Image 1 (cartoon, one colour):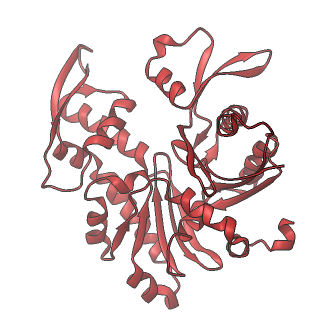
Image 2: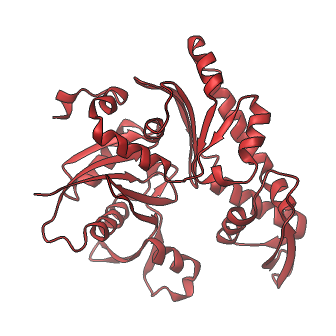
Image 3: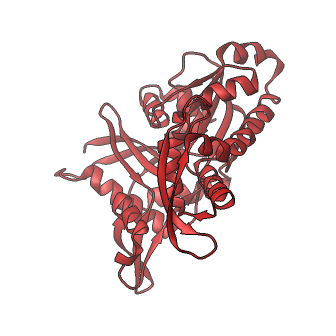
Length: 338
C-alpha cells in the first residue's frame, strides 16, 4: 500500500498540510461549521467556507454553529477537531484508488502538556493514522537552518513560540498568547478609544494584514467602516499606517519582553553562538513591515525574518529523510518508534 508522508501544522489560525516531495497540499482556516444530530456533530462546512460563514452569520441555517477547534496551541473541542481534520485529509487524499498509509509529523506548541499530547495523538489515530509523531514547531524550523544552535521565534495568529534549540532538542522555551489575535484586539480598542468606532475582529485582522507597520516612514491611509460607539450608527473614517503602529506597539513590546526573558535563560557557553547567528523570526507576524528591524533595535541582536508562513511544515518535511536526527531532538530513539 502507498505511504503518504505528511507534515500537519495545527498550531495557528490555519491548518497547513505539507506532502513530502510535493509541497503544501492544503492550507485552510482552522474553522468548522457544524450541526448537532443525535448527540453527534455533523460537518456543514470547513476551512475557507466555514470562515466565510462566520463572517456572514445571516447565512447560517438554524442550529449550525461555528467552532474553532484549536486555540493557542491546544485542542478546545476534540470532536470538532476530528471532524475538521478528517475533512481536510479527505481533500488531500481525494482521487486515490487505494487509501494510503499516512505517516504524519504533527507540529505542536512547545508548551503542550502530556495530557494534551495524548489527546492530539488520539485524534489522529482515530482517523486511522497509525504512525503519528508529535514535533514541537521550533524543532521543525531548526531543520531549515545551518547552525546547530538557534534562537527561534514563531509568531502566528493564536500563539507565539520562543525557543533556543540545540542538536539534542529544545534547551529552553515558552509559548505565549501574544500573537496576531492580540494585535487585532489592540486595533479594535485603539479605534474605539481614539475614534469612537466599533469594528469586528475580522475587520481588525484585515487591517493588520494589509496596513500594519513598525516603520514611521510609511503612512498609507485606508477607509474603515464600523459602528459609532455612542449611537451605533454606521459611519466611515480614514485611518493611517501610523494609527496601526500606535495600536500594535504595546503588543510588540510585550513580545520583545518575552524574547528577552528567554534569552536570559540561554546557557553561558551558547551566548556567543546565538548572538552571532541572531534570532530567526517566522510565522505570519514576520511579514509585518519593519517588525524585524524594530525587534533588532530593541533587543540589540539581529532578528532575521523568514517571510514564508509555511516555514515550520517545510522544515518538518526534512526530517522524513533524517529520522535519527528527529528522534534525537524529540528525545526518542529509533527502537522506541518502531
